[in-house]
Length: 324
Image (cartoon, rainbow, N blue to C red):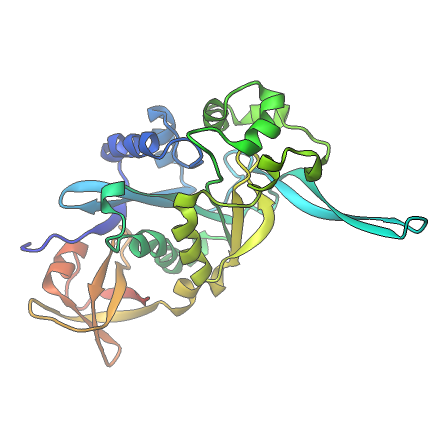
């Protein structure tokens, strides 16, 4: 191929060194990137887990993934923020008080996560491919996934120190945030054993902890905006370690799932130039996706030759595409 195209493909065991590097670069708080080779290898092997690599010029520069059903292999915990109303007729006072409840996920939704792009490649248009390709994968294999999709965004931490962890979890674990963050991978049962089961009144927490509850890490704000464009909204749930927000959307209402379309590949052209761009993906068992110019005519699609070579598709095959 004369032109190198960034593309998404399923992660393999050979990608483990790249994923371990991402985990080290990202620091604590990205809950789906453990800094442990054995755990990453196990994650690749789990049938509920789907990890993808973003490859560019023969190098893996990013990752993303999703879990078909959370809480199946290991329990999934969160804090649920509810509001209690306290009234006093004598004082003529009514106060709304946020209360945090430690809960385990029971409905087993689909979860998207593991989104990471190396710093040197940020701001070059790779973000939408990493984020939206997961929804094309869901659209392609819809029966594998739940009726709701959630995501747990990285919470606020300063050089590995989480204000929320310092105010809550640290008192029960006696561990630094980075140590505890890895514990959820290596010994998830410890989370259930040690986290407080009684409700926590958030107003009793230090202000530094209160102000980060439900807020994303600054590096995660662009990902949050892309998800909101897809129809995700903030929930009343958040991460038990760093207070990062949970977003959710009905699966069939996610914009890329709902509006992605299928078309037969009509032609591969080396001189194709159009203003219409889309994420295009295979409909084969081995999923691949990339950003491409497209030409749609009579429910058939024409792609650049280099894109066809990247996706390993031939004329007459079916293509899934999403204009964004």
